[in-house]
Length: 438
Image (cartoon, rainbow, N blue to C red; front, side):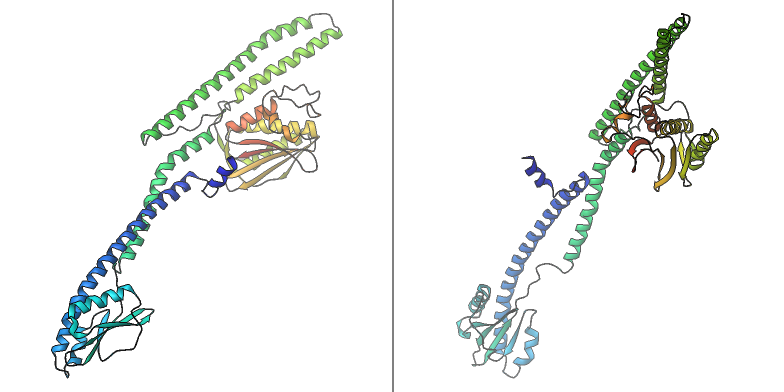
């Protein structure tokens, strides 16, 4: 059933704006076309009725005039009696066939009734494309007279098609304006929803406009506030618990260190160190949720990354910069430095060396890539490792003592400065951490 309904809708455009354009414009054009067709039919019927009435009386008068004129003067009056769709011939006319259409037979009968039986009226068809027929008369002096008719009717004025084209253009403009006004709030709402992240306050949607739009914008803003309050409350609880745990852990470590040295004492101290590390990372994760209080600054991204690489090289660490492009962007410098340091440290730890690249993938999009030649990460877990407290059961995390918050903190910080962090396995082995910045 779903396949059938999907196939029925497959011809429709995907966007709501396009569907509204199609529906409104098709409806208006259908109504306009129907109105034009009705007007054309009405004008055709009116023109036909007027033509028959005019033809009937005009021909009767003209034949009577020609009949009363002397034979020598009749030819001089023919031009005066000529009309757009018929003219007179002094003579028997052309041979033809029986009248081929009901309309021509009707016209001949009207003329015969108007002029009377004395003129022995009859008609014949001489052509069909376009239709031409002749009406033959015999005047009182025995002379033949022929009326040649070529039916041509202009039920509409010549300027009417231009008016119709102008109306279509006006309909297009009005349809575009109506759809734009109707869909603009939806586009604004969609952009606000895309910009809303757990780590940053999203843009507020304007509550101006029609009642329905204002209600939807108000509901969205309220939802955004509730989500922000909920997340801040959870992060505050995490930070408070992690901070408060540091004091009892310190007391426990001091008491254990005061005991006599033994293998059991050392194991307890190691566990307390691991617990302290977990608590510190918990506090760091909570603080990273909003990028801290650091203000964004505009900097040369290539020079910034290059200076960080040089710092590692000065310490004798295996870090290289393989590609760089001149580019500037607005970021929180300390947050970005912390993220890059975390990713470079991971690359050195699990791959033995780190390779850094700065690239421009679009006119307004930059990427910083940190690559290694380590064991990589299974494809099904590339996104999960960015979640807090998620640890891989593989060689990348074996015996590291980590809490599974390093990449989560990096992803939080990058999101807080308007960027995105994603992981991908490298061709030939290894991992790539790709930071996308606007």
